[in-house]
Amino acid sequence: MSIRKNKYGVWEIDIATPSGERIRCSAKTTEKRLAQEYHDKLKHELWQVEKLNKKPERTIEGALIRFLEVSQGQKDFATKIRHVEYWREVLAGRLLSSLTTDDILNALPTHKTGTKEPISPSTQNRYRSSIMRALSIAQQSGWIDNIPYIPRNKEPKVRVRWISQVKAQGLINALQLDWMKDVCAFALATGARASEILTLTWDKIDFEKQIAIVSSDIAKSGRARSLLLGTEAMDVLKRRASLRMSPYVFHRGKGKRISEVDKYDFNRALKRCKIENFRFHDLRHTWASWHVGTYKTAHH
Image (cartoon, rainbow, N blue to C red; front, side, top):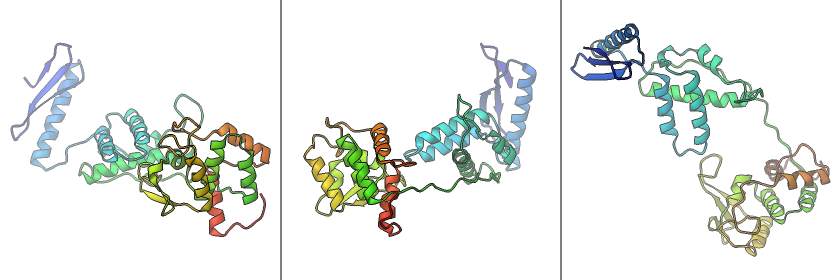
């Protein structure tokens, strides 16, 4: 018998393909009529695959799993897992060949989970990129012939904010935590990101060549790069060397790695210096402005 109930009352399918291969699967229903319809449809599709060389139908779940497989080891893998969980929920069971532009556009998230806070156009674009990459991988695997076109949202221009050298020195002086003074001074001297600074270890520093290596697992681009260590950066490292007690260059005094900059101390220093609309990452913009010659001595 091609369909039969299991001990839980759910119908199961047992089919032999034209080539003799045996396929068993659950119909996931307790209704015999629905199970029989599924059996007949599956048997017909298997015949078309073998006799007419028709591509077997694939679901979105398979494409998303393949997407995760090729994304393993990437720095944003955790984000991609979150995206896959979302798409598996909103497009559950959908055949890849049935997906249209409207299907995906209408399924894009509009609000943060559990809140009424709208999602930004850039965040929507990240979800779009994940589903489009999954579909592209499916196409490369021969699962589908075409990919629906999904337009990107327009994103606001990147905000760039920087301050003068006088203001920057005033900001450092206004910080109360010594390690924050060193972190900010190093950021201004090298243009390094917060994550690159806080994970920096002594074995990544070449004092002779005056460079620090940012490994590929830390670098935003996913490629290792070097930081040039000028006089100001070397002065910071000499101060930190006198406090050396762990592999990490920057710590609070006990040698443990710091997970993030102290926003309270940073914001308090900004207020004291009357610097507005400024974030820690803007220290990197400030470093860049000083080094491309676009910024002279004007005070901000």
